[in-house]
Amino acid sequence: MRKTARACAILFLLGLGAPCAANIAAPHSNPASASAPARVGAESIRVRAERLSFSCREKDGQPQCDFEAVYLFENRSDAPAATPAAFYGLRLEEVSIRQGEKDVGREIGEDLRKALDEAVQKSFHPKQPSIHALDDYLRDKTIQLDRAGFRLELPPAGQAEIAVAGRMKPEANFRPSYVQSAVFTRHVYLGSQVEPGSYEFEYLVAPIRTWGPAPVIQVRLEHPADWQSWIAVDPPDGIQRRVDGPCGDGRRCVSFSLPAAAVDSFRFGFHVPEPWIFHGGPMLGIGGNVDDSGGFRMRFGYELAAPAWLFWSLALDTDFDREIVLAPVAEAALPGVFFVFPSLAIGAGVPVRLKPGVQVGIRVQLSMQWMLAGFVTAFDVYPGLSTSDPLMFQASLLGQIAL
Image 1: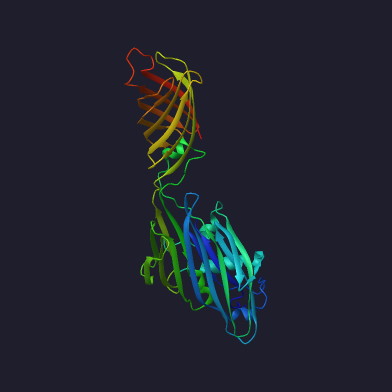
Image 2: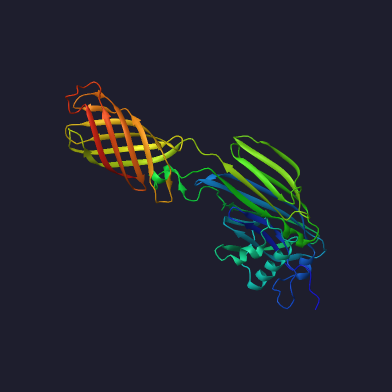
């Protein structure tokens, strides 16, 4: 039995976590199992052009990219053409599919899904190790592959634009697997979790070739100017007419063209620099003095980091009776290791005793923090007092809770 030509369209947008991908494909289907209507009209539909844009920014400690893929379809026959279609995606959010101002989202049946999967799988050139084909995702049951259906309708010898928009989130974040930053270890609940890293997205080009002659794709990538970006194409010489430069408001734009007939996929990614200031969180210490002055002591404090290894804190120590001490402290801290080893820190500060009298001293502080629980010890010296005064030298040891 002779197979019919293209029966339906697929907007293939695949995000491989780090990778996210998108493009168009049309499957060959068996008439006995095809569920697509208006098959004659669908055979005449071609993709004339694709414009693809990415606008990337930082959110929740990692890059994410808003994307828009605009496809120009044309009907090469003198009869109306209509066909069901589907949008595929991984790790995508807030996806919309519109034809002009009209939302054209539809459900997709199982038979059509299988036909589209098969067509997309066959659209690649002979597979290379760096290429992710559809069966890679289908075999990995831990990856959620979503398909959102829609319906494409074109007038006789007419054209229509389909715009697919949404948000991509990366998967790949290359950083030490077992080392947790000092900010995270010391303030696991309220501390900043922004860390430097490399993040990758992928866009699949090959599926557009199932429509016949493939167009040249116009791509625009926009991102913060302080991110280091990179683009990799398979084959490596596939990029045409690349333009890279600032585009205002602290942003940088990269524009280039890709010949879809030759390129299977392209990847882009970013190295995100470490921020200068990290939010830390509050601290509560309970313990006492272990020197001659003796007695109960509590500490109320707050700290932040700038940069990530140097912590700046302000703490109030008091016994709720005889003594009140206000102490700014700077500490150099080591990262923790996989929730097993705590973050260790050593620092110095300037304690200012407000009660019973005003004296300025010198503090050396050691601390150890593991998530909520920690210990801190401080050695304070007040040079203005005589050596016989029990308040001249104080050593305190406190258990500490940090958020």
